[in-house]
Image (cartoon, rainbow, N blue to C red; front, side):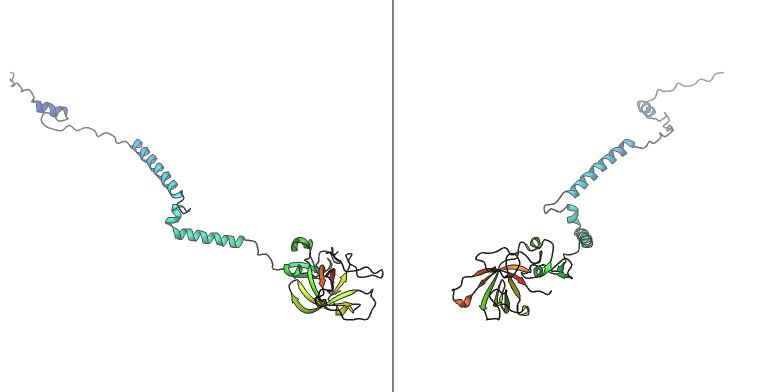
Length: 254
């Protein structure tokens, strides 16, 4: 015996819409497996690229010199800049060469003479006995002309062919000195002898040591200032005797 079933009504439009949205006709949700979550590689790569570009722009901006010639980073951190500068100065002080010595190594008159350490000004002084290789390069040329004012010429025992010499009176300054002109005087009375252009004194042949023009004075001790040119004038003669040029050989030790 069959049991008759009453016909079912057709679904309403809202029920059809709910079914297609995942609901059953009785409004019971359909359980479905959740989809697997994938890592967003594309988004991560895009974000990393943006970060790299921004970082590069910031680095260039920091390295760009400011208006006063310093970088923006130096302006932002003055204490760091001062510390770096102080460290640089410390390194420079350590690595700098020693200061120029105040004196030069010299020998007395000859290469085999006693050794000393003398300042440049003393080495280059006319009459100085200190030997230095190529002394003219060190001193800027030959010995400069000196002026000697002959204030007296006392009579001495001797003949006209004897050598001349000068004794300083201790007065004068700079390139000018006052002196006494002596002839045939003992060596201890003289500060310098008058010599010819060959470096020798007056000889028996009567060779003169007085010149009308500036002579070239051959040094008795090369590469020293022992021999130097000078001009003698005679202020007490009232201009009756013209000045004469000479070569002076300084008396300094043996």
